[in-house]
Each structure stands twice: as structure tokens, then as C-alpha cells.
Length: 139
Image (cartoon, rainbow, N blue to C red):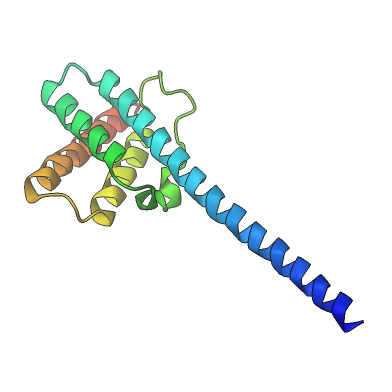
């Protein structure tokens, strides 16, 4: 009787271990998905504002930086998708969402130089201005 009970405990432990491994793999896949969605949103932002060369260069640099950093930087739920269609123009609230994403990325990653941080702060200011311009034009 104790032998069968022991086998049952081993089976339960095996199931728990398997489930935890699945949850860990799901987390990595979810963070990769968030990262790729953020890159897609940045590419949409890039094509929306391609006439402003300086901002286009900064967005491109942010895209490259986003592709090179680890997925753990996308832990925050702010990186879940915000745009339903990446080929449409940005609405005022979408500028705020992308602003939050850039802001979180700046403060979560300590591997940026001071010059790179300043350039990304310029992109934050650009998003704030676009939000204010588009929200006041709707009134």
C-alpha cells in the first residue's frame, strides 16, 4: 500500500513539474510576442512620420535597440498590442500608449548611453506633441 502511494506522489510531482515548465515557456513566448508587436507599432509610427527625417532616424534606432534587448524587458502589460491595424494612422490615444511603452523601455534597460537616452527622450517629446496636436484638432 505504501508503495502505490509513493508512485502516486511521484506522478503528481511529475505533472506539477511539467506544468511549471509549460508556464515558463509560455511566458517567454508571450514576451517575444509583445516585443514583436512593439516593433510592428514602431514600424507603423515610422511610416506614418517618414517625412520628418530626424524622427525617422530615432524611431529606426529604437527599433534596432528593441530587437537587440532581451525579452524580459517586455514584462509589463503595457506592451500588449494597442493597434488593431498597424497600417492606419495613429489616433491621439495611441500616441500616449506608444509613449508609455517607450518610457517603460527607457527605465527598464540600463544599457543605453546618455546620448542614446537623450535621443529617445526626443522621441517621447515628439509623441507628446503629436498627441496634443491631434487631440486639440479634434475639438
